[in-house]
Length: 147
Length: 147
DNA sequence: TTCATATAGGACTAATTTAGTCCTTGACTA
DNA sequence: TAGTCAAGGACTAAATTAGTCCTATATGAA
Image (tube, rainbow over the protein chains, first blue to last red):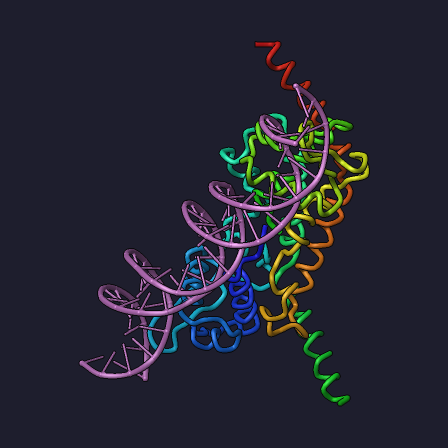
């Protein structure tokens, strides 16, 4: 389990959409706002669309928007769309990498770790992130005001 | 945080040494027993030696052995020697990868995940693994006996 | 004392994965 | 019907991982 840049991009992107619901927002705008390479982001949004997390609209004034409320979308979901599942160690997923499947004492540790991570990611929704962002942004403002 | 093959090898290697304390065991034997490429394992053992987890002895009848009791060595320690620390997302370690350090709402999630993982890995020692191995090996034996 | 058996260490290479780009096609709408 | 957008496939570049290889050095035993 390691967050790829792609996943990072995807999360920021969905966060942006979550903060601008009901509008269709195009790739260029998101890429500029969140500092993500445009063409790469386009690819990521394709995946999110296929997965049903966002819906797309072509043509002018087209773009993307969320299909669900931010509170209904977890970090885990996005993570899964991009990376395909939590994989702490190859051996846990792919038996080819472990000849000791039936009696490996280390194996269960990875499984436990995976379960823990999954729980945490499932329990964080984009509504949570939005409210945190607000608090944090406020903090930054106050800091600026002080100086 | 993703377990590299190298770390996997290291863990199996230390487990083997933990199961054969007081003897010096050489690279060749461990590599054969645990199915790890010999030259690669040699490199790994160098790291473990430098880190003070094993001590080496050159010359005939030389090899490696643990410097401490298995109960005193955690999975985390080995992990750290090989991979240098838990890094769920680059942005958590390296600011270059995140322009949003001061107000990123996703950031704290990774930190929490890292802390959780670390706890779990610290709390598993090689003594734990050895006893698990015993139980598991016994299970395999019973299965074989049945057929 | 010298030979066989080990590790130490540095410099390489091969394979795989990650992080993108580019280009053409197809949908929408003003 | 031209301009604006996404869809999709095929590529490429960069970075990381997973090793190898070769030489030097230490140790113990014949």
